[in-house]
Length: 157
Image (cartoon, rainbow, N blue to C red):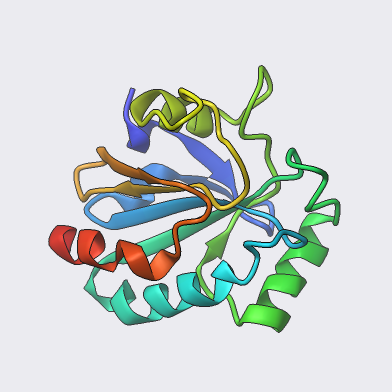
């Protein structure tokens, strides 16, 4: 299996194949609206605007598994992201990132790039960088500011 074998549903319920991102550099991030790291949405959006025309995408996956920091509905989460941070990158429906019912994409990501806790996602705003061939290149800790990923992103673009 590789990144392009997975599908997920956008906030509007439309199922999307990761194959749609073939040939692009992608950052995947699990998000939360009520987390200390929530302001990272601003830097993520800045990265997206800076590099999108060069083949860069950010895919956001809300998750409520960490201290219930994203209890809202998908529509409420989407509105929050747009109103408070001007998010224009693709946001997907809320998922689980850990455990038996974790989204298959996140099971794959955890297996491809282990973190401090092994494969398990430690917290909101864990970020994965994927190259144009669909390979997971790097995993970034929740506390890593998105701007610190710039050099790695630029190398892949």
